Length: 67
Image (cartoon, rainbow, N blue to C red; front, side):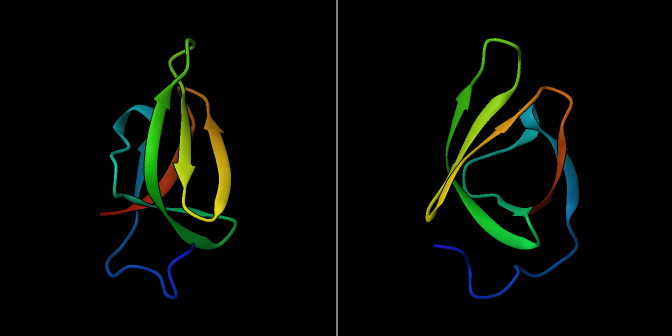
């Protein structure tokens, strides 16, 4: 389930390899909490969230992250 409001603070642009469990990632204008991370063989990640389908990130993709 998505958060009812965006976490406090400013987002930091992060690549797939710098994501951590518990980070809040902004996708489609909403914050989602990371519940699981899986590596891809190309260096990217498959990011799992509660209440949202997994998001596939390439190794050079950046997303806004709240920590």
